[in-house]
Image 1 (cartoon, one colour):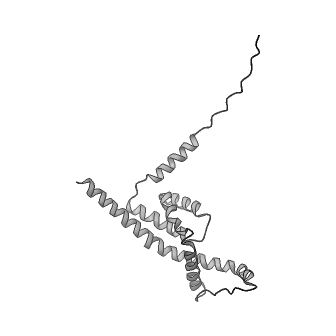
Image 2 (image 1 turned 45 degrees about the horizontal axis):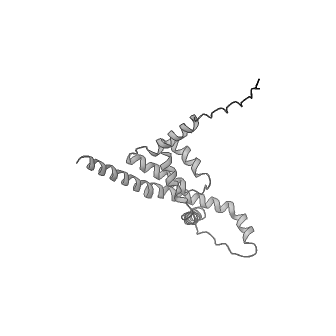
Length: 169
């Protein structure tokens, strides 16, 4: 009589429910039809958040704030990418300059490169960050609605009128 060999039990199948939910959530965000008002608000908020010097946490901040405000999270985060490596140095420099003007009433002091420059920079870092954050708040409050929001609103409204005119033919 032949001995019966035991076959290992098949591994339990992983539930794709979580992946399915994530995929449908992502598709819903990307396929959402935004009104000009919603597009303008989402871009304005994204630009405001993107200007802030909170590098590394822009994504969670965008998701939380967009959810609370009922805005499209993908659009908010896309607009927050204004702080990409090409623009970030200019945003930080402008934030520092504007923040110093607001905080101290005069332009920021220049750092002298010399023997103690690193320790001076480390010692001054909290004050510099405070000035940069303050300047970025003001700059974001201007850039977000004026530049980002108005441009997105007008482009979305133009696209809506164009679509209506095309469907009316």
